[in-house]
Length: 268
Image 1 (tube, rainbow, N blue to C red):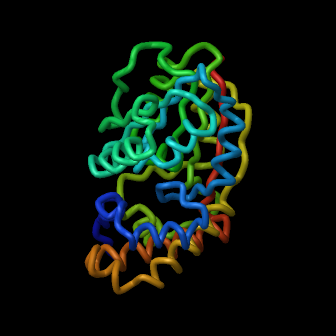
Image 2 (cartoon, one colour; image 1 turned 90 degrees about the horizontal axis):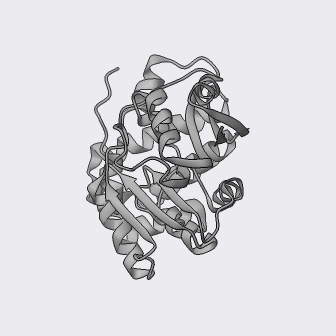
């Protein structure tokens, strides 16, 4: 079965400030981080503990989306932060939130394709975070080497890889799961090897598939509760396609056939 590309990211970012998408986030997460994905506030707190940021730190978030988590990071840690994303609507929403929260002097956002070499000098950042987006970058080995370049000595990275193949997955399931963007599905320990080859030492690696399963279910149910409003905004194709993605994501994560791992690594 062929699956058309679904503009789920575009619909979400364009409608970010509307009441209906705010309701979806509230029903999905409880605590609205100001963006959507497989991360909730408790998990974000875990990642911040790994990064150990303070007022002297400078953090880069790769694929920051609408920027809510990065703004939360700056408020909790006092760090300076830079967010980048390829989606103009996402960056527009992020800048608006930064202005509204009085953080535009410490947190900046730019439209940047993270699939290319990043436009920063060597040793620019104390830490890098990339949540559920490294799977969208085609040359992961080159991207990790570039991240190592722009990190200061002893700098850390935290990222999640939400589509590690840990069981049999059909071609139709892969087609649905990857119908919103480019995806690179990888075997277990693939990221471990690339980190080592790129000059990193792995400090933490944990299976966070349960978050993927739980959020996919609550996100799908939240959207079902607002179906009429979302169909009017997104159109039938995007609404139905997004619901299929969430259903497949929940099932694959619950059966641990497609797993989500979180990493913290330090430059050696």
